[in-house]
Image (tube, rainbow, N blue to C red; front, side, top):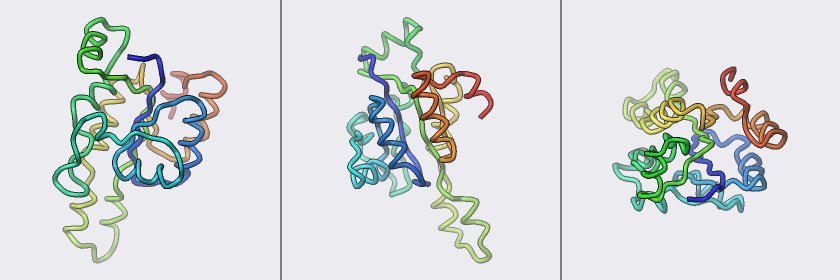
Length: 174
């Protein structure tokens, strides 16, 4: 395990993501990204690691199926390096803890707000992993900051540049 900073990024709304991720890399974050997010970052010449390199698994159950629900990902979100048993598990399973999770969901509400939406399209846009990841990060809020809204990117970057972390006070009010 290293003392490097790790960010998990899995987003549907990519507004402002290239600029944000580029700055995270400048701040020495290693970015782990879901398949399509990693592809987006690669297209913008931003280095990231596809989550499958961490888990050893390709996404299953279709395009919007299971990509991130895996013990190595959830372990990296829940990990508290101050707890001995966590350090032991992190070492055993080669898990580097995330200090930042960037996640927004598929546009389910937008999909069903259309007059004549298709049931299949609505189901397709019903996010499973995203909400689970956000809940997991919320459970470990003292060690992991969560961003669900692209409008918070600049605030987070300002905190990281000025304080090298996101103060708990900011995390609580957002």
